[in-house]
Image 1 (tube, helix red, strand yellow):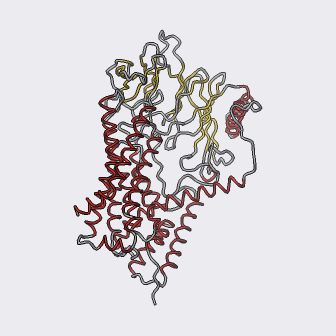
Image 2 (cartoon, one colour):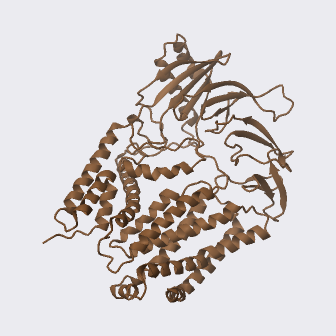
Image 3 (cartoon, rainbow, N blue to C red):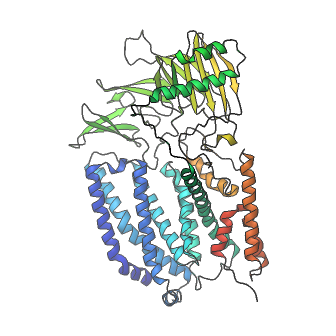
Length: 604
């Protein structure tokens, strides 16, 4: 075994060393233009894809070179057990990827931490473990594809991405990452056998091998159908004109105001309040403002990736970067690298730490403002425990309006305060409907004797432009001068207004219709996303009856296809029942995995 490890190392070490040097130079060049450790999570995800591609390419070069029958027999018939042969190849791959990926990253991180004033936290070191784990997952997926009947088996790599790539704490992510790594390790190990074209013998191994492939097909089928229908919808749509905010011939603000006015007017049609007719007549002359639930998540401590970006003090040329270890901002001059101390909850030099990771001038439950002249931070609004913001503050109608997961809050400036940074005074508040997600759109109208508030509720997390299958509803509330809210109108069964601003109107976002069981399994790790402002969507039995029928038809079609495929073959009755049950329960992804894993050998 040791000889095989050394043999693989000598065979590929030059490639690994070359990749490591190129990787180190790339990191050095990137560090001249940006703070690599604080890159947005989208850019860091692109880097992770590159590292996974390196692992995949290594597997294709290393294991793929043995795919010829003569070379495979020479490898597998060594005086070693197949498990030890696989372990030797995997350990040599780990060493090669360590030289190409881990060593340059570790040296770069240690040098950045020791030499520069940039923020480097413990989470950055733990992230290196995740990088190596995902690179090894890619290697295992490639090794499994090289030793499988079908090369499409490389799709098992999508399973760990679905289950373990979340914007959560690097510590909690170790659980799904370790589980997925062990899972792919098991699958790749059992694909090392003398005849890789032969079916997998043991039922337990077959199930654990098929499940990640089924998860991958689950994602591919849904995304493929979504893109296909979107393309048909785009081709079939007539040519139209795109209206831009800079278009001189179109008053975009007036058009949006007209839409908002029509929404409230339609809501007031169902009102029994005697003032409703007068309100409808006044709407074109009244001032209004829109409030949206446009914050989907907040950063969490020790998060994998950076959701909250550094902010700049342009006057002093100081870049303030948040440290998850200290829970404070650290100031740094990007030109000279000089440190400018720490920024706490009260401003520069404050030792008080943040309780939550802040972003965009707001944290999960606190809104604050910064006095750039005095370099002080002032707390403006603090929400009670269990309540958090779901939208950014909107300054309109001489008020600051904010939507939380429980209420709509309207604050007015404290004109009697001496300081310009005095906290605002709560003018009125409106409780949202219980048991419902935050309204997707809120329109506030200022009346002479109070306020009109239109709340539009719709489950846009599950549907995109498919609201006609759900029951969106509108509520119009009058808030008097005393701040007391009164519901004056409600409108249900709304099918004439589409909330979605983008996306085709023919495809739901949720993928439960492909396979309800796999949908449930794929969404279990969503519980790790504690930074979400709305709880994770988990509905394996949707409220839309049309797609319940579609899901049932797909499962029955998969069962029928499996029965036709296995009919007349030589497989055992227990194996046949296993595939039929799997296709009936998991649907199309199980049928596709059966086509890849089960050779169709007919009896004589």
